[in-house]
Image (spheres, rainbow, N blue to C red):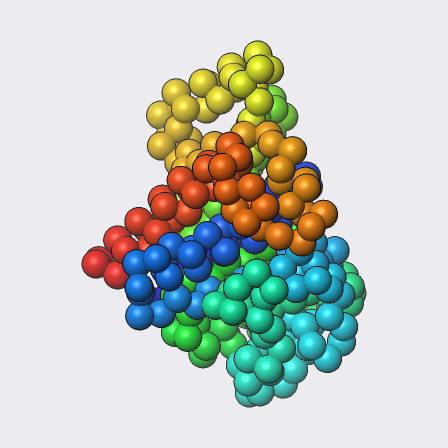
Length: 275
């Protein structure tokens, strides 16, 4: 079974796209290094802003006919074939494939409102092609909209990026509760909250350190912390260059932290296969 990771949080600016793109690329590299039989990873961009699409393909809006929007609007019997046709190869690596975003995704939710089976318009075609990939990573918009609901219903693992700020950590439980509501309400038992990713961590800021300590000490949430990504200017420079942080500066602290996170996710993939 292919592990499908979704990056989600109802707040913007928490490095969802940064984490999704670098995790997807990092998994490709790990799979290549161990000579895995399948080294392909699919990145799906469900955010109409298209930041993940832009940095990995050089284009943020792939339009009506060559994007996730095309898949969502296709006849359901044709959707899996359309998904394969709309998938493009990333500029980062030939084994990293991207189902890109389009600005039309902003209106897709209104178009699909009330359409029977709308929440499954991503999960159903994805089930048909998932076996072609060792892993799938889904980037979401900063809200629990229909589009995010689609992503969660397609996923096996929810990963929650947060910044080490008071309101972020206070809102963390509400994010987890929302994921559980979708899991139980739609009877999608395969979906698990598999990790919290603390991003933009600055140890020089006392508040960051205190909030991280409190989070790690929490009897439930502390066990979910899967990665701690330090604030690092190399991430912004990598975005500008349309490159992964691993390629831009493999020795920087962000690259090392994302490498550790990728290693943890690779362990989850192995555990799933061995289960």
